[in-house]
Length: 550
Image 1 (cartoon, rainbow, N blue to C red):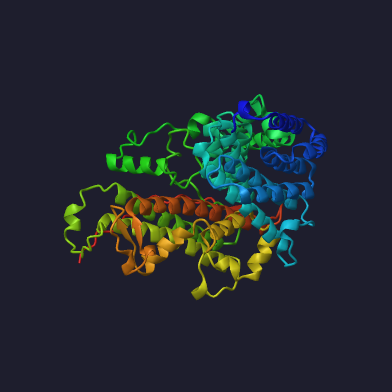
Image 2 (cartoon, one colour):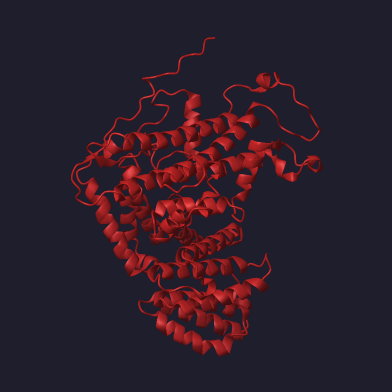
């Protein structure tokens, strides 16, 4: 932010004009007047760079409130022109990126509200144009929010950070990626604990996944978040009257299943140490909680048995004589959860070995190229965890191909590419489909050739098909012998593994939610002859693999 005392008189007048229009926008029905004033001020201050930047943001806000696409696009085009002329290290760049993200998000939201109209920026005549356009707009919004937040160390205003994280979470939520959206809302609350929009949207996101939570804890946390949002003094300014009503309706919905529920029984206080677990297992649970690698919806604000377990579970209602649907689908979910838990354990064992791995590493002789390379059990476990996590995504692709009868040849099938080759899948996405299917689609786009997570796929491919060499020092890697894509710093390899595991965790939750929603859609409301499938959870103490004795 620039210093007010350093402004010239015209700049100060332009600044006051911007404040005036922003005040109008904060008032109910003030967008029309703010837009009228902006047209009056343009001839006076259009030569001032800061006014041009602020003007574009005001256009986007006015267009959003008035549901006027042309006004939003005017602001977006102005910001794109400004971005082209602003240096990458300019202090104003994050604010331009933030406003540009707001513009693309507003266009996508407007397209969803009025699907028969299309944006001038991305007009298309393809059969699935509306879906492709909306996703493209949201992808642009997601990109610019991330870019702005990457520059957050130079942004000292908690209010800006909270709003940026909230808007980023809203974008992820509109893409169906509410699990990652919840993480963004929590970061917003870390900057401003009383941010009404972040609290309310967090509560709504928790409610959305309550049917697969395996516990009432997410409903309790959703109720608390929504009640806190409604109790915030400036909820109208931050969230607006429409959001207040949405929060109130959501609070009513999540409160009904909790009537008469003894919260003390839902939240049994139980630390790992009190449960009698050994210190190594205690450290494993702490590791999973700290890195957000548990398959549950808990926010981490309570230490209880639910917080420490993978509670996401598939529950279906099927026909009375249907003895195959639930076992088949439950086995798919069990497989993905088992693979994820195994990869997670491998990653933990790599970074927190139970015993000194040096004697075991000495058993195997490796060539040393004087390149500070790491070989042994720990690097091998990280690579196995990496490949195991990626294999889960391909299993999801194979399942969707069968479950939705997409007809894609399995030999060409992988998670990233499957979305490009199926007309049936495009039609399902175009028609709105399931928001959880949208989420899986968007994850695939992020991992694709032009996605910001493509480096994870490159590391997996190198590890699976050839090799990846981690190095302990950033020198002498001899990459000219094979290529840079086969080499990483040890810390970078571990960080990529955590990044991938977090992504796959979300994908598994979206998969379970998708199956549950899709199965519900296959039955008509009030249909007779249906039976909820109440099955016991697996008890690992019942069966233990016998020790191998040759």
